[in-house]
Length: 342
Ligand SMILES: Nc1ncnc2c1ncn2[C@@H]1O[C@H](COP(=O)(O)OP(=O)(O)OP(=O)(O)O)[C@@H](O)[C@H]1O
Ligand SMILES: [Mg+2]
Image (cartoon, rainbow, N blue to C red):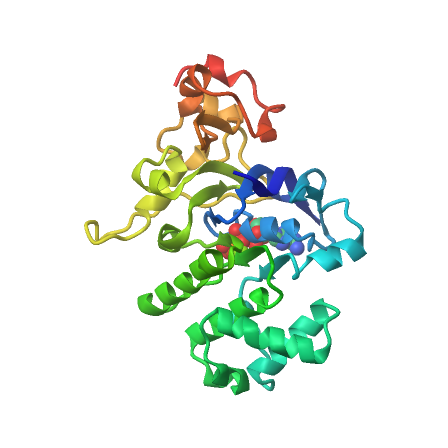
């Protein structure tokens, strides 16, 4: 499998009067060509910051102290602004969090899409308008929607208009930050299917942030679980749901209500602050399977089974017996975790 996006030891900090908020703090992962890659995790764990950094959209007081982000081998962090400008939208498009609520009420759908395309490309007005109509078509919207105003659209239609904006320039990769929000289940499914079709019919790779695990289950091939600015686990979707490894992933899945289990259980304790992450494993203060080693030793992200990455001391022995240590995000900080028994 060829990676389209390779992220290595990425950190994004925000300067504040209390010190640096370490919102993304050493994440490494690959997104493969034509896959739908999900990013999950509680509010505040750094999902949006990660996506913004991947598009080099972090502005002061935010900064990127370390990291590499390669799109088809080209390093985005060292790219000249002009080169980056060419790549954004045409090759890598973005659906920002809340974009469906940001439609301008006085512009028709076609006008706002055309304006958006003109702002992000050197297309002529005529080309931009036809790209806007093609974008609407690609997300299954009838042509008459182009002549509507935002107040004439349902919530689900507004979401699809926002999705169509990102597809209009026929990119290879779309980074979608919470593209599906509170809608009825049928509309949610329809819009998730629209996103899946972008991959199935147009070959577009998708990296999708959502905090609803049910959305991930519906369309993602693989999922990574973030906590406290780091990756806790990366796995194929079916394996993540059938056999979650990290105790935090267990907690996230238990929080999803199901038909069998009507009651959902929330994870005990409160999410920590990026100004003061806990020592050792960042999840240790809330972890039901906490061990002594977790308090002060950072668990490195390891490939404990082929394609199965987890950062948890419970799997130190399995990792020592099985595969190599990979994803070096924390390797420098951790002590020899493999010596400690699970
Ligand atoms: N400009 C900023 N200054 C200081 N802290 C910031 C700034 N932007 C983001 N943060 C902090 O970074 C952390 C991660 O924020 P982010 O928006 O990436 O979280 P998220 O996982 O997308 O959450 P949600 O699910 O609510 O969208 C938060 O604690 C947030 O307060
Ligand atoms: Mg967010």
